[in-house]
Length: 334
Image (cartoon, rainbow, N blue to C red; front, side, top):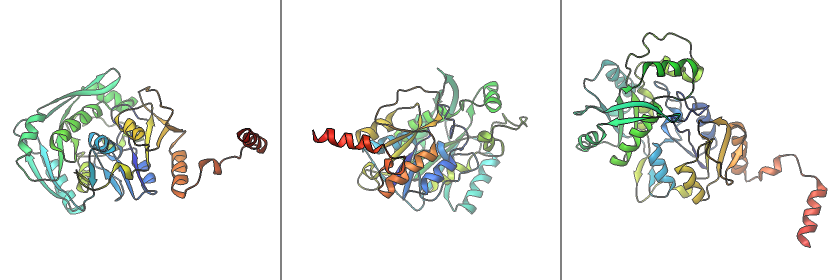
C-alpha cells in the first residue's frame, strides 16, 4: 500500500502546522504503508525529524506534479546534497553539517550564495505569505554544480512582535508561507528535491518562556537545519520515465478546510481522499462530496486499515436494521 499525507504550511493546521508536530501522524500512517509520501512541513521540527525510512520527503509543488501524472518519483539510497547559505557561513551551520555527516552519513557540500536570498515573511488575508528575492540568481549559480538535492538555509525576515505573539498565543506560523513560496519557485526552476531551513536570527535569544508543545521544537533547536538534511538525504528524485507513479497511490489524507492542487489531482485520478475534521485550518474551502470526512486521524487510520484488509468499512460498524435491508432488496426487485 502507498499513500500520501499532506500538512500544508502557513494555513494554521491544528496538527502539523507548527514545528513538526505531525511527526507522530506520519509515523502512524507509515506503519500501514510500503511507501508514504509527505511534504517537508509535516516532519520538519527544526533540529528534529522522526520520519521512518519508508517515508518519501517531497516538496509540495513536486508532489502536485506527481499526483497530476507529470512525473515519477525515483527512490534512492543516498543523495548528494548541496547546502546553500548567505555569506558568511556561520559556525552553527558548519557544526550541523558535520553532525549530519557523522550521524546520518550524508554526502554534502556548502556553497555561499553570490547574491543573498531574502525571504520576507508577511501576513496577508489571514494567511502566511511573503516576498522572495534573489531566487533566480540562486538557480543560475547552483546550476554550475553537480548535486541531487538542494538544502537552503537563510534568514527569514519577520516582525518580532508577530513572531513572539505566535509563540505565546499560537495560530498561524508566520514564516511558513514564505518558505513554501520560495520552495515552489526553486523546485520549478531546478527540477530537484529541495527544502528550506531558517537561519537563527537571534530573535528568540531572550525568549525564555514555556510554549505550546507543538512549538517547542523551535525553542530547543540551535541551527534548525538537521530536519531538512535528514529528509533530503533520501528524498526521491524526479524522473520522467519510470519510478513510483500516481497510479500506485491508494489514498491521500488531508486536513479539513483546504482544497487545492493535490486534491483536484487525486479526484481526477480517483484516488480516495480522507479529510480529517479535527485538523482544522484557517481556510473554509467547500469540501467536495467525493471527500471521505472522518473525525480524527485515528478514524482515518481505521478507514485505511479496512482498505488494506479488503474490508468494507460498513462491515465493522453497527449493522443496519434488518427490516431496512429487506425493504431495500424488495424495492430493488420491484
